[in-house]
Image 1 (tube, one colour):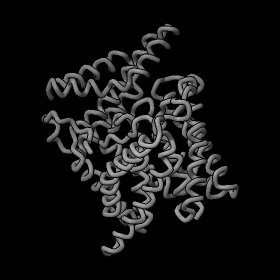
Image 2 (cartoon, chains in turn brown, red):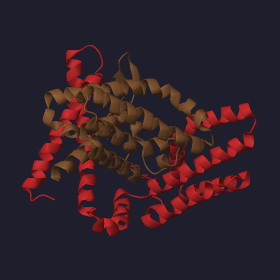
Image 3 (tube, rainbow over the protein chains, first blue to last red):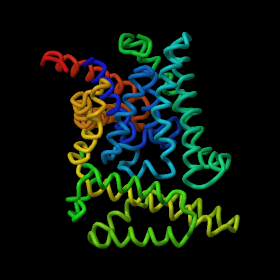
Image 4 (spheres, chains in turn purple, red):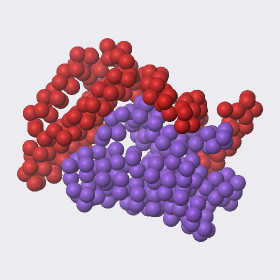
Length: 180
Length: 198
């Protein structure tokens, strides 16, 4: 019980830190924030249930007025802005990523990449695009055009999430609660 | 860690959190189906007037926080100039700015403790379904405490990297950071159990 609570809380903090750390350079110096990497890792490392709770805790604190979102944003305003769909998608993405790693008995790195791809790319952008379509009064394909530039970076993040989860399974197998 | 509450002390800081939250939710819900430009314009003017009544410095800070909407306003402007439906674009943009500004107003004038107290009141009825407000409060405190701790650790990892490499620290520091979070979680769990548990 205590262990569940502290893991959920520490990973909520980890999502915040990955968004606040100024620009982790991916590969050839493309600066993108790693916040959605944190969402993916919540699912692939903690598993579906705990990962979702960690993301919900993170979002709850953001709503209370803590500047935890990438770039130090937060407060209630972000939940009615055009990007609100992505916030709704965050817990779903962690849940899907965790579920894939738990159920799919592939090697952990591959399962984690699959989960991060399905959750952090497919589910997250589906929610985000729907949110932009509603707030900006556009059709879904038009809103999808706005999300398109971010697909490449998120694909890279899914690969990294897979690699990190695999590395974790190697150095600290008992810490990988999603496969526990 | 600093919250997003405005340092400009206004009269609205003393209004109770619950009604402010309810009013903002109601305002957003009411404005959303509105298609009439004069209504939205009037709502925006009223909101701007409310900000001005609360103070000039406060208004400037609030305006600064709306800056995050500029990419979307740019997209809307270009799109609706292209299609010629300028009135529809103004409705969408006005609605968006109103909803975000209204929600920001609540965040800027409500302190974290007042917000937490409001959440606790709302969640009290759920206690019988197993949602213990004390556990939730502890989780919130842990996140607030450990975000700066992990941020520090990330800074240390980055510096250690720079001592060894001419390149900037990249994604290589994420795995040790995750390990730190997992280890800290285990330590805190042990400490909690040693003090009698939850």
